[in-house]
Image (tube, rainbow, N blue to C red; front, side, top):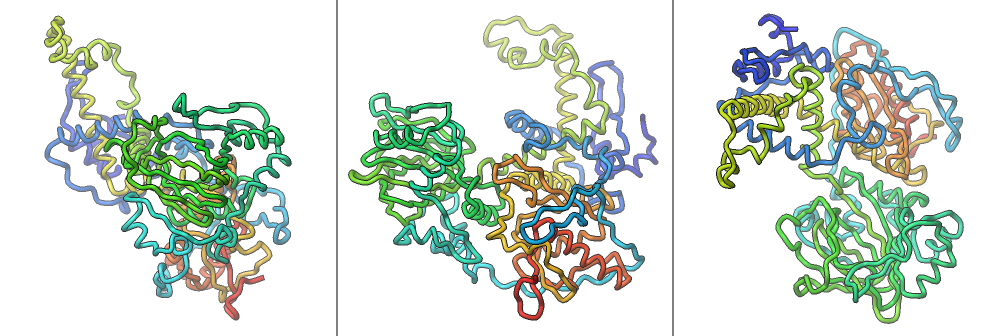
Length: 612
């Protein structure tokens, strides 16, 4: 359907800008001039209405530069991982989301019978509705936030430094070693701030005895072979027998135990504490190495590493990344042969109670002392959490959006693309290697196809750089991050039980900074994606979803922005509602809904303690 100029004015303003920026193009398929078609895509996508859409910056004067930029983004996207199906961590194409009717994934009426009790039967999904009113109410001001670094936190407890100093001086720059004197420091944690780390050699053996474990899936039994100059495995599949495992440990094999957070709540809560600081998925593995041994060859990792020495001693040799491309790498390395490495830049001996931070890409290898085994546990952060990953998400989402709303993006590729495009058809290649040049018709066809691709890349660039689209893509990326995080811990999150009865004098806060993500890309609706239904086994749980009317968005945003400060229930703003009774009712409705999802801490106003 071709739209008139008046209809274009009523469409999303960015789309109109894109039309003005693109000249009438010579069709590579028909040889006739045609103007790119468009639909009212803000209606199909359920984007913000034109009145609320962000202003679009002036059209760049030089399209070729934009084309090159867009093509580089496309190349980045094509090199990224293939999109996985929704429900396994992939990003859902927008059309599926846009055509889905608005339903609630959770029902505020589904309540547990008390703390620790089971939920009542699942009620049909519904949207949490606000009572409408004409005039808006003034938003209440938050209490002045105290300096976050002034209170004990993850960094001051683990690294004896402030959050600000760590990120300014060490993060992604250099290693850091801190000593706490004893591994009991880790097993004690910091009450109400950092959960304890619960792991030991005996704990590992007990778990293997009590629970079926598999080689390759739950643990690896390996050692570094100095003759082969690489890591070798004892077994790569099959069930683990506890007696066999202990025999391997006596015979000099190392044990890498994977994800001890999946069955120990405090370890999961510790990861949750890290995720709250780094705003990304975090993980954990443990490494047991016998005396006078080396389990792994020199290598670097694709994660920021926080290594906690729990038992024994281990001497570490650290090296700078071999090449510039390895700095802050997005992929782990293959094993290095020792002779490939220069003299270590740093040599460090870690004892029980010590912590070592290493940025991504730092080459390392460790060897135990002569007389004692070593056990350390490694917590990791920032795997595939870079600007490149956000851009890959944005390109994928934006391409899906354009394909859903523009017919030209959905047409089949011309059949002659392989015959006239590609490096072997480049004039310089053919001339250099003595190949016959393309025919005149083929050269014209090649030029026409390249022009069409450049124009489509310009469309992509215009949408990628639009402020509203940037926010939507960031929200989509944030939503997928929520899916991977650890669930709230009953013992350590501080979430109030369902039996807690809030009042307007109660004070509330979210259990963590990243326990939910607020999305506003559907007009008239505020969608909340949260960790309340997540599992300790990454991506195995159903991501929680709550859907509110848009009037709830300011109050939800207030809770997110105010963390970790406690906020009075009566201070939650509903500027779109003028009736005080309706405001009061919706304030309690929001608090009760978030409480039922396990996302809220509620304190009474009388004594500042959690309400019962």
